[in-house]
Image (cartoon, rainbow, N blue to C red; front, side):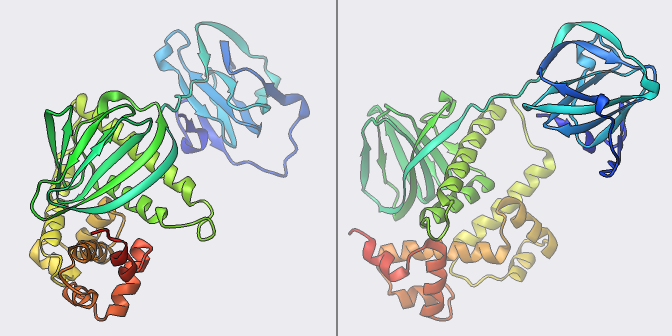
Length: 389
């Protein structure tokens, strides 16, 4: 992708101009650009003004036409004045492209033939999530096992709580703990085993896609906080309908595609040995400690001030961490965490809904029911009825 000329008010090649919409431009200076490539550059001895008129034009500039590495490209926005002795050309980024080219004193340009052709180059989009067939967010008990036969679709598995075991080819086993993901590709066979004491919550998304590389197939991958936040959004969207939100499915597709692209890019960055800065690592570790603390003590009625005191961190820094890694306030995240735990407690069937509401700090069953319904799109009583024992 390219920068825009408006993002570079002044540089060594041109300056940006304010556009007077009332000013009448000379028709004889209107140039139609039809090609997305060229073997020549233009050069003026005096300043020349270039103004967008229709479509999108790509401005290519340099001070040394021999050195291809010295070329810079910008999308022409509004109006610019090229400095004298700047080599340039304009290419069509879109159909029906026109610009005004106004030299000083009607000077004619020098036309320089170049060895290496200049052309519009846009990176192709490779990964395409086309269809989401289904989404399942389910709690499983110790001892359960789910065989997966080969199918013609992809499956993204995410451990939301607890731990699972993935068995491949009857002999290779991988353990996945909380926030780990696993991508099963079409035609692959495996089994999911729930071996940990207690319960595990698993998210399964079945989808059709093109362009996914094999590098992320059938191996554990940890998801970051931003990716987990997107997955949470996908789950919420899955409970919508066209009347409530006309374009909910569009957002689901786009969100899942973003997660898959980030998984591929994260894997590529890991392979190239790209690491975060020390500050980024420190922030990430600090935030993970806070999350671990909240998850271990979810039934305590923590307030923001409690976290500030416990972790010796300022309130503004705490707010910034939650905003950076979850896009939520600490209060909203804590409430979401409590509601997730309530689903596990409902599945466990040891407590009534009123007892669960009380243990998790909700003032009344009515308040708990409203919060649960808003978070998951189903009332706690109906969720309890939907659990297959």
